[in-house]
Length: 153
Image (cartoon, rainbow, N blue to C red):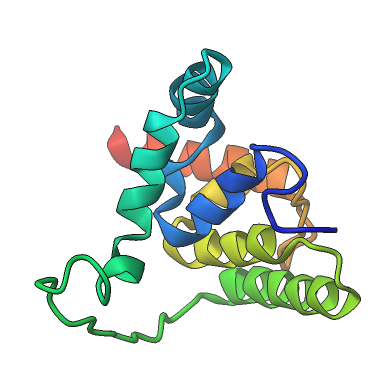
C-alpha cells in the first residue's frame, strides 16, 4: 500500500483536486506543467504548487501572520435528479471507504463536483448514473447542451 503518492505521481492529482477547485488540477494542466518539469529533473514547480496548497499547515511554524481559519457551511438545495446522483455517489464513497479500496480522494472529489459543478459529472468517464427517467449520463449531456443552446439563442 503506502502513502497516497506511493504508486505514481498522478496520484497527486486526486489530492490536489480534493484541496482545490477541480479545474485547478485537471489532467490538461497537470501534465504539461508538473510532469514536464519532473522529467527534466526539476521539482521546483511541484514544490511551489504544494507549498501554496499546504500554506495553512505551515502557519504555526513559519508564517504566524496568516489570518485565523474561518469555516462557513451552507446547505445546498438539490433538485430530485441531482439529489439522486449525489446519494448514489455518496453510497459509492461509503462502500469504497469501508472496503479500503484507496479511492477516498477520487470519490470525495466526485461529491464535490456533484455539488459545485453538476454539469461536469457528464464528462467523468467512470460515472454512468441514470436519472429518474432512466436516461444515462451521456443522454443527459446532450439534453443539457441543447438546453444551454436554447437559452443562449
